[in-house]
Image (cartoon, rainbow, N blue to C red; front, side, top):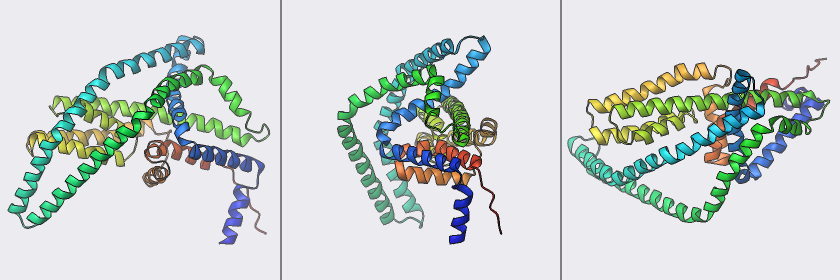
Length: 353
């Protein structure tokens, strides 16, 4: 065992390039872990800036204009679309959320009736078990309700902080786009000039993470719009809200697709029972997920991500345990970052004498 670690150390951490890059990674990790609440708005701004930078490059190359002019055009369009989304879609979704919450008691009552009727019609579920299940559900709902109330009360004092974030994030995005060259040059000052591994790692990560974020945004939009359209055409209640959840679910591969299926099945079942409409909705949802996983993802992420499904699930569990919900959302970009570092990390040839 000692020989293994010794050989690994000599292979990976004896070159000055390797040591410098390792120290940079450790420093960034510690700062992010300690100052997560402060870093999150910056990370969100960086992700959005990466997303918009591809459009800036496209506009610059296509129309042969200065980058500064392209930034102004793309950024103005982004702000306009964001405001339109907030003013139009957000109220509609809030209305659907309100309607869904109001319909929960009716759904629960019908669920109780189904449980009691199933306990009477078969021997697999007794009336006592049905009562226990219903009691557990009621207790869970009460717990969730209490959590929501306590969260609302505790978060009331942070409304100003949230408002400040909404103002600061767009400003950070603008400067990340407008002064990208200067910011990159400033960051490069932290990388020793003679140690080119750190600079090569920065360039490779910049390319990989940027591609991943832009491709993921396209995937979210495709799944969101297609799900909303199909749900609306089939007459499913809360189609806009459920379609949005389907789009957001692709941020967390595999786990998100399973999780978002639960509310879709519940809403469809309590709306139609097991009639043909219920199965149409379920088939449409499964079809969209299959096309996303087997057509959209391979096309978009052929070069952006090269991770085994097991590695993705481990990353979600690991970063989710460390940073909670933010860790879950940032798990895949962080896993891509780690995978890229492992791929470019040089190995020293060991002499076996």
